[in-house]
View 1 (cartoon, one colour):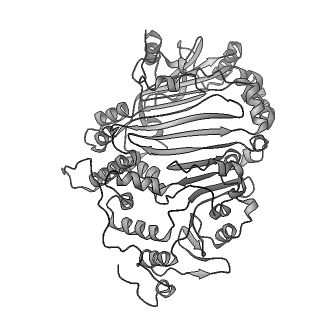
View 2 (spheres, one colour):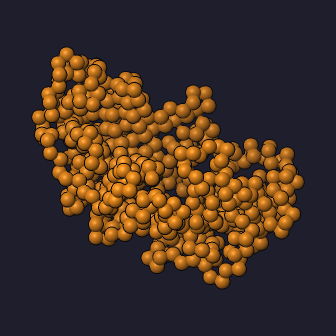
View 3 (cartoon, one colour):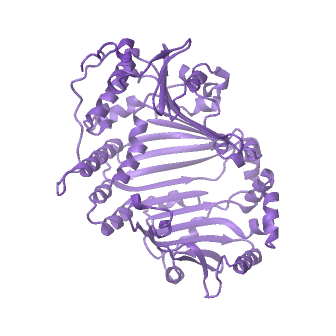
Length: 547
């Protein structure tokens, strides 16, 4: 199951490669643009202590790969893990110039020679260049630069100009000058994150030129992540700018969407609910000028924008079960996308203006987009394994995988039950999401019994939940948690053991039997500080020192 292994590797391992201690903002924050979309900071000291409690260390992130272990060791020597390291992304788009994107890691430099040693061993022949402000080298899809205090690694942009911009940035234009960013740093957390909502909008050319970017100015989301025993836990807070805050306060959310799927007739593998006041959507559309544009198109169909925006009540809930792929993901093409998944689901939405909804359905039926002649309304997408989806309208709008399943939904006397400790967390929330790992991995294993990774996942991961509360004051709060089966083991150690086991299964001979638990011993063979090189080594004029 390479796809699953890759997914967890991306989430947990690639980030942890640049872990560090977020005690407070340091000089390195002056190299992070103030309009960055997202900034991640991690605390290596906390993380390493938790790994050590499970007889693991920094090299455990390599998953038994010797080359990766040596890269990690040289990275540890080069980067000062007692100071913060920041990983940020910045993307912008415009209709005229297209999209530009950069992902970079900014850290305090500990040892220049270790950087040169890394290059000499893993990028032999790399051309190291020096400028007035920094030294750098570029690769096929990356670049790295450093001066006496800071090292910056840029992914996806082998460009000297990007490095020059970051190294010479005026502090007042950097993230370090933003009080709210400095407030988001938490020395007791394993990780902190910071998201600039308005900057995210700039990644869409159409929204970037709309007034929404002005409305969302000074709207940020930040929070903490901790690798605890038995779970990866996080909390988050969204602080709204004055304009958007007033708009939400004037159009509060009903926050009761989860009730729409309470009669779901099976144990769902996932549920999702969202509550938003339709008047808020109308206000946003008017502010951004989108409503006027929509009127032109909808008017040609005989529908007004007010009717379209008022038809539904703003409560939406989705539950799904037995959703499994019908083919390997590597064989997915545009032609077979509709038949990729099979399973059951119900999407239920509250109705605010029934006459407006009936008018919209009638117009869509006239155009031939939907078929309303069988007692159910059939829609030509999102059915079961490529079949049309089915919709029924009474007190709510119910969209389902099939007519039979919708009938089961209406006939059910009682529905599913969430875990007792989860139900109160997700009830009456603006946003709620839940994944039942036990149900999902069991269903996948039943369908693909030869795949060994699904049972391993089932013995490792319990479930995942996320929620967000209503606005209170100028902010809203939320939380999320990835819960594991073993409550006595550190969650990061358990995840690394799972990844190591999946990696071994992927590369093992047919019929081999491998255990789930597999720790990585403390590395040996590479000294702590004396794996050094010099510019002559990088230029290829003399061989590097042996390890």
